Length: 335
Image (cartoon, rainbow, N blue to C red; front, side):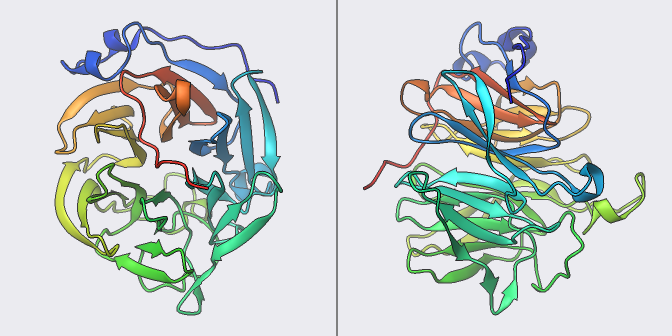
């Protein structure tokens, strides 16, 4: 797949009303479209070599039973190719400290599991496929801590598969393979991110009031629940306790994915139809900047090395990028 001609929008600073926007987005930065043509792009993350990986979630009821794809954008050639198809209906993607690709595979004929792929060999292993002997609901997003522990959310937005977990939760997967359910009070958790100081686990709640929007007629009314960005105290043993709600988006739609920069600021993909785009918050929840996007965003991810101030954004069926002042936070590489 070839990347389309870049779409350049107005300078970000002119679009943002936040007074501290100049400290977040680079002066004169523009939003550039570098891929289009997906169904619902998600889970953008950058490999150690600078290649950009992202999911294309192909709802089976809308795409003629396509089975999901993981796409790879090469910044040097500006070409996007299919890295893996079927993807297990992957959603959130992350690279661990050893440069291996982690994928949260969802429902709708997906794997409903967490997998890890060695890019050198292409071989994958299943890290977590069951909890208490039952399949997960639909793993959605992934984050990691400095001890190599993986945290992932497990809501359900679509899919025909039975729900066998008693709650939509956040789980911790330890390096020894043990899985722990650590957050059960987030209603319908979506995006997750560990702070650079390792003391906070940020959790997005996006409760659309549905368990299978793909199986209902469009426009079917539903009672939406909590739409929040919350902070949980993350203890050294990997347990987490609710601390505070940072942002309440209700009654509008809440966010999806999020990442941190090196100062701990949060770059959040907000799907509020009245004001969708990337909102940047301080660790206390104060909005520092706001970047409108042409399509409703789903996730964000920073580049690495010389491109650590490049912010990639999945939105609609596209992939965008722009420049920031601060570099993104990444765990140090380990052999």
